[in-house]
Length: 400
Ligand code: 7TS
Image 1 (tube, rainbow, N blue to C red):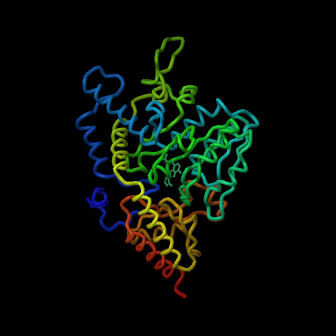
Image 2: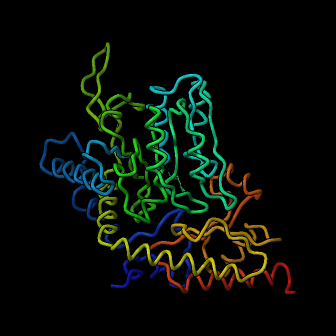
Image 3: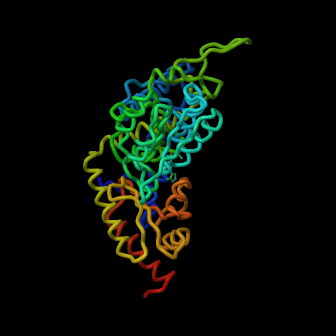
């Protein structure tokens, strides 16, 4: 079956050019079926029922955790905590692990290209611990600059928080080299995988991540589910941040003790349907051939960059090595106006600061327009966007 046909969304929106997969991807039938099957066939709460159905549902939920562990090449399933997504995963590390290792005078290192959800939690942690929040400069085209980061790693660097792929310029960061330097100084590495997991195979051990966060909805899965990978020994040291059902071992009037990792981080009824849907999304992704996916997406990125660059006044950020993301601006036209013009032509892109205001400040712009690809995008989508941007120039600025 053609890739696009596996996504019912495009049957409802046959003429829409959807170029906003970095915000959220569309869902294949297999994921929709898994969600539906869960509710029709397997709906019960987990980790508590003593009837067969609840037992089976718990097994399915834990099997999904195992699937995430294999997807990331974690050592074991207990290193996977289900969360609402990348934001919750990163906040969990900052609020639970952060205070265990960060002291006054230590340094927390990030790049100015980070998404706010991998920026603000660390800024807050620095403020509450008295650590120094160190923000590394980016390349002139808005990518994380690994050399700049490397230069700022010191014996005081307790945490390096870095996106493997950034959400505005889309460049790939060589996490392993940075991780080795941070570890040699006794620090820890937190990787934001929100934009890498949809586009490349992830291996948390090979990249040297102590923690790795991603969102299900960006890898063709449902919203409201994602995961945090953490090294077992580190998760065991961390206190829970939410309290209630499912996360306890025993409770008395005087005190409570916690369940083992990872359940101590999953208070309350979890997003069970989401876990089933996420497992289906991972199965769907793993059925793809990564080298074919990469080659296709690289061709689309190059084609779109070339197409956009043909219009005078267009600045394209990032590099041709971007993983499925092309951010740009058209001189003299506000990105929001351009996005509205494109919307009228049934082209869905994102315009704004992309939750990366520190990066916008470095680029000297309030916002950019961003096109981002999923498995269903085609060369025709690139050409329609490039032609529409050329038309927008005529519409807003007149032809010269
Ligand atoms: N980190 C990066 C690099 C991201 O791109 C995003 C979401 C997040 C973290 C947060 O993920 P969430 O699932 O918890 O929201 N990025 C975008 C975006 O670029 N446009 O919309 C959401």
